[in-house]
Image (tube, rainbow, N blue to C red; front, side, top):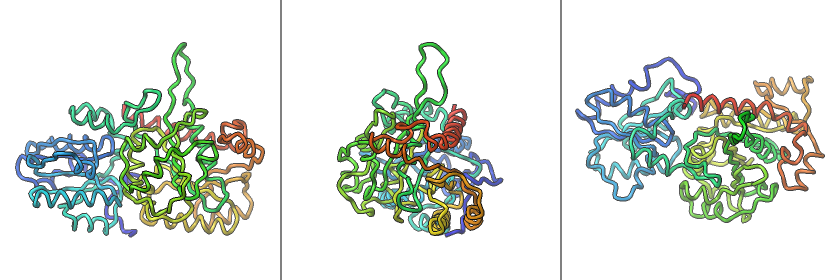
Length: 442
């Protein structure tokens, strides 16, 4: 599965212009003046590809900001006026594969399908797509659709604007009519009691603060929208840690095993007023880890990405078969541990496992509850891991106790804690990364 036949958006290579690239393939599979629709749930990708295809006078292209599975669910859908469907490949999404087979059967192979991707996919994935009826798989090289191509996509057509607006999650403060393209930040622990949930909550709390001070009198600071999600729904304690009650929506979502809609996600999120963070806490009732599926978690992350500036995911320690969509979408992936031999070995196993099919995964190693050290043991551990530790979070038992007693994140209960101060450079880096993405979209 390490043989990647397509280009990663994180490791671009020199190739043809992605806007012009698909036309040669289209001439082979589409009739003259092909009536083409481009589908993608990633902001900007559908518009970018459709705009490039329209440069060819033989192609009449429109676009929809919606993934293939959601497109197939439209009531009263008709494909009589479509010759070719170009869709974004979402690796590991069973709902898209089912939709592809359904649409092929409905059209009796009259409509042809072309898959495009800005992410690396394995040869096995490409073969599965071909077997399901895709005529060709085209890599979009030198492109970062989730960062560079989201400007003015809703202005293309009234239909695209309607879809984009319905996908955005409205907030209690009236800011939800804006479609965002949030950073996905995943955190998992290499050992029990390492503080992964505390890390996720403090990170979310700091990210929810205004990025810059407001100098103009009467102006309100721009408040980032931040969500934190407890994906360890079997043993997660996030809700109890900050006194956020389970409203039952999460458990219903797991019981029905359906790909979440914007409305379902909105129903499950609970605002933590003290921090301004929206929380999806694990349900009180235990649920098996296999209650979640890859399409479910992919849909959940896709909805959250469009509604928030930052999405922090607290992952279970157990290996689950629905982790692939997280690995494919993560902008930062934090593995928390300590310098103990058995923990370092586990960190190495996790790195090898998670990067096997996702070589471009941006892994960052966090040493928790330890002061920074450059001793021989640390150097030996870094040599074994093949990389340096990126962040050290000092132990602060007083701050942890105060946070636990008050039902608050450490960043709120004790803002001047050494643990919180150590997080500040990371938070500044993430805010700068998101601000740069916003400037490109503008």
